[in-house]
Image (tube, rainbow, N blue to C red; front, side, top):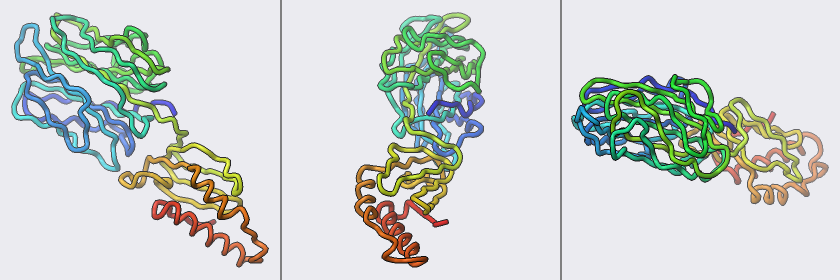
Length: 343
């Protein structure tokens, strides 16, 4: 499975208090949502329900000279309906926020992460490099500006090494070895700040080296954060999926992530299910789950049907008996997770 980008929400700005970024257009159940918030002062934001805080730097001030920003990065995997997007705080200074939606993550996507606030004013803020734990990991980085500055170029010292351009790109899929800037905004409201983010894919597990962002204008004590998200290793289908199994050897292996309907063919018998395949998480019924054939399932199936003989039940009665037995077996294995029909 490859990474894809669903959308980037427009940057939202508030002078103080809560901030509510909008949902990226096209976001759907199972998508990875990454929220980036840049703000001035040290009044921290509380996470909305369902969101996990990844990194936070909360040492910001409201000084107009060599200003120090604060920043927070959070994520969640979207459910069947839009989540709460309101990050709450009491008062504080100017804040900016945006959400990027991706597809392709594993069931437990969060990997390593880091953040850092520059010790002195600079035009090249950095965050410690990440040592990714899996191939094809998505690296997402953000920069919060201490004054109204744009983050124009993102790169890493080791890999991914190809620097981003300076113009935001909201449609090109995350790319091996190359950074793509997704947003770059600034404001002169309040104590001033700016928000930029970018992503890249590291083809193999290993060290990125220091991750940095180049900013325009006067230097500031900007802060950065970066995070690894791990890719799904399952085969994928955004439409309907059909799987044919040998009823004796059950040669199919692995797992499949799907968003559409599932049809399993065993000989001339077709069992179909819509929404989640068997084994999908009940909380996301209706879209984006995974189904797999375990060794225990294979063994049980062989034991139940390897010696089954239709001649014992000739004609229509034999077929009906086979289907009854198959239905009972699948019900025992999957319970209410499989709703099937024969056709």
